[in-house]
Image 1: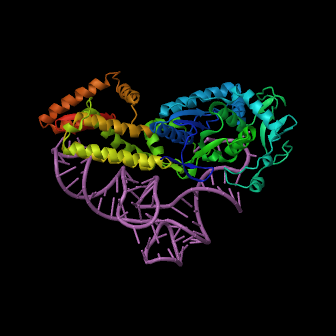
Image 2: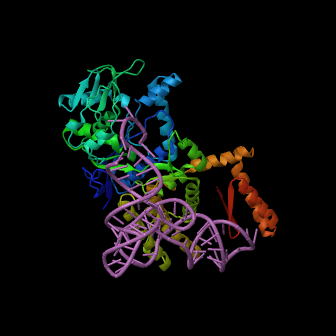
Image 3: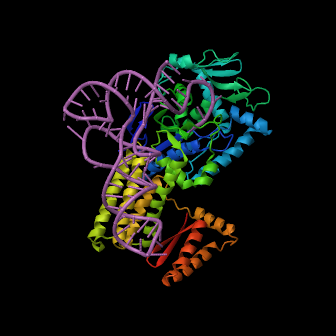
Length: 485
RNA sequence: GGGCGGGUCACCUAGAGGCCGGGUGGUGGACUGCAGAUCCACAUACGCGGGUUCAAAUCCCGCCCCGCCCUCCA
């Protein structure tokens, strides 16, 4: 039984989707005015894993993630660059999706853009005005927070506490400081759309209420996002949608914890923002994903050199196990009668590891605990491998089970392209142009001969030189395996 | 000030009233020409001060420290 922590109730609840076998998931996407940073990556990896586990459990997941392409920061940045804001943000949206793709995140089913749903937003705002939840003020429209009795429930704050913290700007058209904009009249030079109230643009929160309900219906199952969005963004989304539709908006609210850098908040003013591209370049996407998965998604994570190094080393062990099984795997129907006692016991152990894995993931997607199962699997596999060469079909079965689990955590993906790229890079570095692979094989042949003749000096120097080039050799008896490090 | 989540072995993370958490790194052993990989073993722990309890890292109280949110940041 899957349990998820619902921010709305502040406790773990059994997860029951509205429609049998189908999960409708909406996650707040990015405001695209610069490249994605590792904080974005953390959030989207977290929800990617959640999505993958739901699919692992047999649910069909319909995943919508919006793109905010209308926003103050976009306008400002575009103006500075002398570009059209929509064009400007479209460019970054493309780059961000590319980055997420490179990170290994499964694409959402759709990425609706705010700018393409202006009419839907106007309609919702009209309804809110008609129903008395919103008021028009001199070309702007505001949501009247006091009209919505449940306001503050998600962030667990009382209205007067919110009031105390709310800012009111000089000359504001708002009646109450806690009210928020649904529609804003455009200032000269700003992008604008025609509406019943003015030429202007929608407030930020309305797009998510509109696009999520449009594509997923109301209510839908899961709404996610970074914990920083709980207030006011998600609070406002609830207010708008529930006021508009007169019913519950979302059943489960899930929030991912924030990412810190060396114990500090990541922010432009501190100057410690690390872009996803930069991080992938340095650590590789799989190490990053392992790093993210090694934290529970709700806990704050701390990005540091040491932690990433740990992740890198740990991951290597899992990779090697996978490689070893791949070499032994044979296709075919596995029947118990052809297994000996040791193999039978290994087979049984896999089953119990899988159970542990599922139990961990069922407990609000406890990925660090789930990773324990992966290491348990590695240990058990290595144990049997060191004693004998197990049945090939059994290895195939084990490999599949291992991959299934790892796949949920977005680990041990088929990354042939990355490997090929690495080889190409090595080749270029040494001016070998696409021949790196055959040269490595040749060197290994030479080394093998040297070892036979006990010319260890030569053998070791070949090994050392290859290591310098990023190729690691591993002797197993007479044979030698190589891998890129 | 208000809301929320934290402080666990050298490092990174789970967990949760009693027994074994996992990974990285370290040490010793087995294996190996060596290295690596692998297995086995070992060590180091629960912010501080009180309390509850036969028993607390886990519950309660106080304190210290850290992070996030409090109008447009994932």
